[in-house]
Image (cartoon, rainbow, N blue to C red):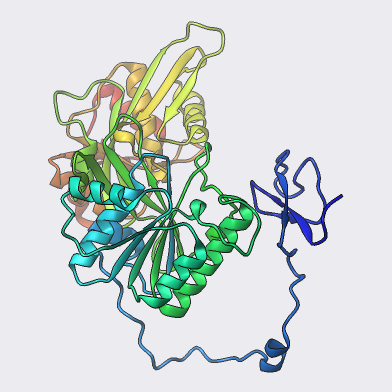
Length: 460
């Protein structure tokens, strides 16, 4: 029998149940309900007498108190993703695969910010102080005035942060923290939720910005209950493909800025280097463009980024053709293949199709449809696109090429990198033609005809 006061918390989604079951009713996961003592079910907290006497106080939207200035860490790519700097009193959760460089990034952020006069503390529950010092020495940051501590007890951490005032605090990681108010072990749903709640409350009361490092599961999701993501003000994901030195910092949630910004870094022997011009990094500059390659002029947040789509269409050696895609949505690939078959007369039913976004970047915007279609058509017809051509446009199920946002920015970035022409939608072009001549196509069949017959005049 369960002990008095015991409830069962799901280790996958964080839902709390009053009795044990083999399957979690909330997320349908099996064997994830674990008995935990000292946790009250939602809605069972009783108000204290002092709280009842105080009552709820309301206020208006007007305020004479100006908002505090953002903390500029000196790492411009990190500040960009945060929305122009870290907001005092905010809590930011940063997740990523093991070994991707989360600790390296945050140590650089602390070191650069402290060199600019920001009071910073780095608290690690995974490494000893000497290990952090050794990494800082290898990165050339040993002289930065950062306060270090190795502690996992939440009570000791809170007492230390209340005694010494800081502007920016890094907790590495939230899964190693534990509170003596709960009997559950570190890393469980109860401990992660309780420790995150207390740290966020401290951030709001004292105006200190807290950066929490979060582990990720094998599916790429931040480990622990999703309630932690609801508690914090921003959720950032640090991504990187194995075999590539590039690292992408991407915002998934941000109460103080846009969520579509990315920061680009390159991992080296002495840490992470900021990449100011990602387009030059993701493009292959050597030699002529091969059949099956198309350069996509995309937008990531506020900046244009040029990346190369690579496609290979080959005869299938088995009864069921393969469809493999890296860096793009597989459902989007199936849609583009269906439009190419039904609207353009290209056959892929007996062909293996492989599509890759070069450089390890993941593309999500619909404007990449035409670039993927151009790469697939180029490979299927064995006709290379011109070396100086960029492609962008959204493809509908009817085969129409729809206009996309910020065409002028895309064309300017392409012109800056030496491109001389573009293939895009016929409507929505900038007045005056833009920075590059655009071969507009109203339908995908028109774009395929231009590629096949090497027609690139804007009035063809």
